[in-house]
Amino acid sequence: MSQPLAERLRPRTLDEYIGQRHLVGEGAVLRTMIDTGRVSSFILWGPPGVGKTTLAQIIAHKLNTPFFTLSAVTSGVKDVRDVIERAEKGRFFNEASPILFIDEIHRFSKSQQDSLLGAVEKGVVTLIGATTENPSFEVIRPLLSRCQLYVLKPLEKDDLLQLLNRAITTDVQLKQRHIELKETSALLRYSGGDARKLLNILELVVDSESHDVTITDELVVSRLQQNPLAYDKDGEMHYDIISAFIKSIRGSDPDAALYWMARMIEGGEDPQFIARRMVISASEDIGLANPNALLLANAAFDTVMKIGWPEARIALAEAAVYLATSPKSNSTYLGIDAALAAVRATGNQPVPLHLRNAPTQLMKDLGYHDGYKYPHDYAGHFTPQQYLPDALRSERFWMGQHSPAEDKLYQRMVSYWGDRYKDNNKQQEEQNQ
Image (cartoon, rainbow, N blue to C red):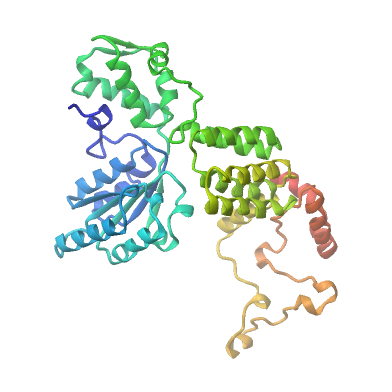
């Protein structure tokens, strides 16, 4: 039985690998790691069909080291321990650690991930994980701290066209078929940046035709016979629909939010993914205009974890409508980004002496804590004093926005700090430019 086209064209070397130049291009981090032969554990995060599994196999082949594969869907703790034991027994003293590749590592339970910790930490195996979900939510912190995280991007148009031309000119079977790529828009659109899906579509279209094949958009659409707007939780539409969902909440349209949520539910989307995005939206888009939104979004997430489908749809819908109908503010989102930009621009500014801790006599003699005013000793539990570093003492990062709840917070700051906050409107306009 012939292998699928995507498998026949799977790259065997980095020179054959298409895309992800930020990771494997000349001088890039993974390229350097592979060329030097010093590979540490890492996790590849990106959408399907962008080369995560292929990259792991290339690394193992390049280093000439044993390569073990586990699927998080079918493997348990016992399978993990068995592989680790085999790796430990089969390794010679000066050899590089065997590579353990775990596909869909986000599906591993906490106990499964815990069983990896010791082997990764001691270098018994070099872990390469692949995931389509945000590792911050799905991978336990101790394991994540022992791995580098590299983000893979959907393949760009030029990458996909290069792959198509390679397929029709180098594949043993296709190069005998006299294939002309007259139009490629439909192929690219349906693939959604997924190389495997692109090659599967190409193979399907070619197999449906006679010896000579002229590929046009009309031919691709007619052969696929599918709705181009159909939800695909593993493809580009996955990202388009969640984007529409979040933008509908941000734009205060509860009907649109419910519609896009329904599209995701009918498409088989993971309810935890929907819930996570609403937690983010509650912080980013609603924020201090209605702090209860974050509480409700977290409650919906907790409900999903406890009861699952189909009842969880009701809690998700309740949260979506509440978020969409809430007043909006992104002041904290802008504020933390402004503070991060200041830190990156100014480096490690010293903490003012009066704010420093003074647990020893020497520190007290050096002036640590000297002059600090304890706010609770003053009327209204406030007294003015400097809290920012000297070089940033006049900087503003949080700019209160105009919603009833947030304006109340802003007015309190004006009463405390006077002129420092009275120029809020001017600074807000400059920050938004």
